[in-house]
Image (spheres, rainbow, N blue to C red):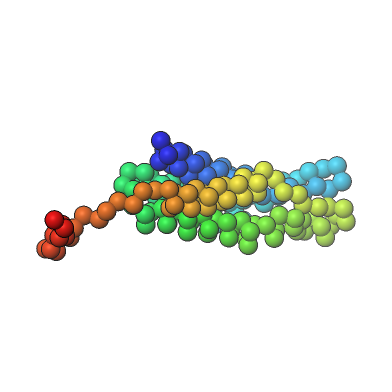
Length: 153
């Protein structure tokens, strides 16, 4: 049951990242008019979509095999998504661009896309750490040609 919950949380984070890529990062408000700003995906080359697909594949791999390298990959992908959100998108959320030069009262505000990508990145990192910590470790099968472990009598 716990494995299913971890898979569901990871896949939910991937869906959030995917939906965020198709949403607006910000909107430009000029007095009473609101103009669309930049889309999330176009702002960073749809990197979060690639991360979401890779994380979903790793989550399925962990769910089916229980291998910890795939769980570690989810943590790394979640951290990468969070870096993109904080280092690439967050500084430009309130950037009005050329509208600011033309209209003194123009300002940019965060749209749903920024909120979705931030929530998705945090959830993916949380899911990755939880999967890494809560996935039971399975003993590796002995390699071919290696001596069998001695059993104490």
